[in-house]
Length: 383
Image (cartoon, rainbow, N blue to C red):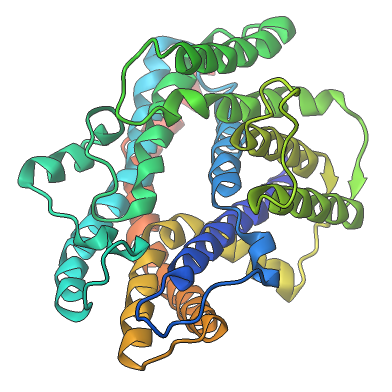
């Protein structure tokens, strides 16, 4: 698959990160930090308040991208270990460093934030122990709990990593066209059945509840080559915006999903289905090979999306402390301050962490399995 075809998937990853930021900005701005804060009201940014849709989109993108990259590389159990090591270095070092940053930031927040009981941002004030630190670092806290320590968005990271653990078992069973279609369907359905019947007790059930989106991404990566159509990028963008608008009115409870609909009467399941469809749309999109400056920006924003996801809550927290210190009480003024500081701050901070943290850790993971030049030449001579 030509590299430029991944552009649309990277753009979607950036969009997902942006939706998460908007969700947390709005949650923070809606809080009343004093008795004279104005009440929140519906405003245009609410249509992009799509935090859950964004996480489903991240999972669907991961399933699709990893399948495109590894479906032909994982042929036996011996191929599992390199995959696991590379994925570990992809997410864990950045996560571990971000935890250290948040542990330090929490002390600043405690010293700077005047307590307003019940505010959402006060997740930063939760007490934790050394055991909790290891539970989080081991990426097992969705099983053991406790939840919502250090940084609220962390909850999706163990889920993502556990999908990485499951994926090779699915890929190795995809031996032909039939099994390539059946295996993701079976895996996604099995996850949802386990969730529905509560067969495996966990502190948070998202691993199984949201599994259909990850394996849905695997499925669209498998089946999209059978569709010979190429959708013009303008049409794809229009369809994407329509999907976002529909998800936005559902997320804001302007429209309610009919109870008579199976599965997608749960809005979160609806978001998951939409996320999978959007990834399929991206794969069918005729992406231009030439890049404009705007294309390059969206591409880079998608590349730094993991760092954005990890660190944006730093800037949300700083924004809240600032608006309290500056006696800003109007809802739109609070929203604007938090939005500007968080979007701009997290973008530039993420550029730094991407270059000095993410890229080196990814390269380190890959270096363990890179063939030495002498070894490579020896293989060529024997062919």
